[in-house]
Length: 370
Ligand SMILES: C[S@@+](CC[C@H](N)C(=O)[O-])C[C@H]1O[C@@H](n2cnc3c(N)ncnc32)[C@H](O)[C@@H]1O
Image (cartoon, rainbow, N blue to C red):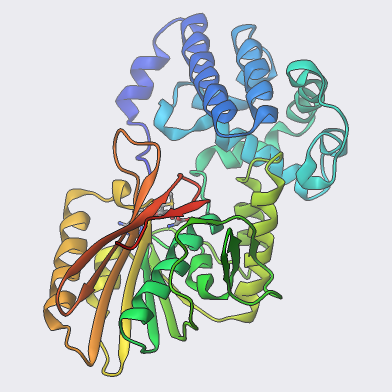
């Protein structure tokens, strides 16, 4: 997760004029608004533009933000604020605003530029700012179910290479929901993977040349994260839902389905860095050990990144035809909008770029197996 602002950064920012501080914060909110617009949340884009205007006018947003006003952009303060508000909506404590939030069943027209919804949000901040403030202290934490579509397809390629049961290991697993990716239902042109009755259905999740068909038998699921979220606790479930943008109902439906799946299919999720997960991973005869990670590598400090690479190299070196090892990743590459779905299998070290996927994971466009 991004580091907290240093005391000196806060002190330096704190010494400048209030108007300048508000202006800088408003600029950060506007940049987040632009990102929300591009990433498919017109509601948040509109709300954040209003919030930026309110910041410049010294309104309620500045009062709720308090000393956080100077937090650097990497802290994603706007999303922390809106996550706290969304939690109020989802727990029935902000009925006026809920009317505009599809995540809570709201169907009211938010108005041009989300003006009507903004007036409701402003009331929530004025009346319940104290309940939102704790959310400013912790980073947004998501677990993108769509990214599991890449893992599910990669598992099909792996068992097509050697038909053995799979022991799945994930680093940076968040709530570990994608450790159940083999239980998702995923469809696309000419493709249908998984149980049609699965609580997680990703229609149109696969495009291009479908992965090989065939059952995938996952016999063990374990993962780690430095800040794991318990998908079985009320608090964990609320946190995960609160950071999904409220007008992205399909994304929220996938999350809710994955939470049901998490209650049905056990996974061992531990509070530990990637280096520790790798250190406790060993290959077992008669199985594939599959190490998977998505959109986490850029969070690693150099020591953790080296430990991940060294751990992969050690497992690769230990692989035999009986005890196989595969490394699957979906990591954002600088300068490109989509992430490659990479697979390497051992023994042999055969490396394949299986396809590409956007940051939220779907649709995966599978490459021609050539
Ligand atoms: C953007 S989230 C992605 C979560 C999940 N992989 C997904 O795709 O939904 C990045 C995750 O990496 C975790 N993380 C950051 N540094 C880590 C480390 N050194 N070891 C393990 N997890 C780490 C964070 O806590 C966070 O859950």
